[in-house]
Length: 337
View (tube, rainbow, N blue to C red):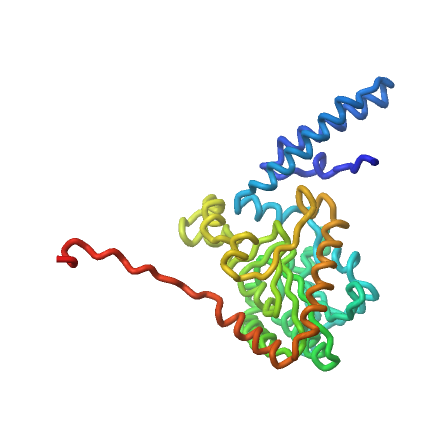
């Protein structure tokens, strides 16, 4: 089997990945020495590669919530545009909200995933600096959410399932966004998506932050990529409120319970989509294949449910969220007497 190169180890490493990066560097140096000197280092390389895989498995099986957030923000992590290129065939992008502008933070259009025709709505952050600025780093304005709703209504008209990709720290909170009613736009989307008469599949592919995520996040099935996160607020934002410093972000991430396993246990999400060893940024093609398989299977499953039952189940699903169980306090000694 041909060796799969891992150039990311030499380009960018997260803080907790430093031992992995050092091991990858040793492998690269030994491979170079083998070419330069003609000596056979096959046995040594086999051992180092086994150690590399073992270290990746150990590290990524024990990620803390804050480390998971860092993986979700990795500069090389696949974005919505990458998944569209790899997964969506014959993608025809639709633009504008017919009111104000075309928000590039929201990409929407018709396409085919596997054999299924869908309407895709995705939050896109942008890859390079120019694209990031154009996409406002994935933080949508109200016109972005209104564009999303416009194409969802179009999907409903033509009885196409809706698939959404969530990847944002939150909706844009600037003056212009507030003036044009970003809170109202998100609220309307919540209401309209809750009664949309077509199947809706929602996947968090990276960051799922605050109302910005909820604005395209009401669906019949909710899934998260293995190393994504979904939360009412970013860890830094939570830390700045509770501790008055962003340095407490790791503690905030732990308290927020924002990882996929946490949210699956709380019944906030339905499924976790596995990522390649070491995260989606190490093998984007494999991550895209996993995502495609999940979407195709889920859309087919939902297609067999009558529309009235689909909408009723969706409503029930979202109504049951946020249930709090409060344990009765132990009676005090004075009360018991």
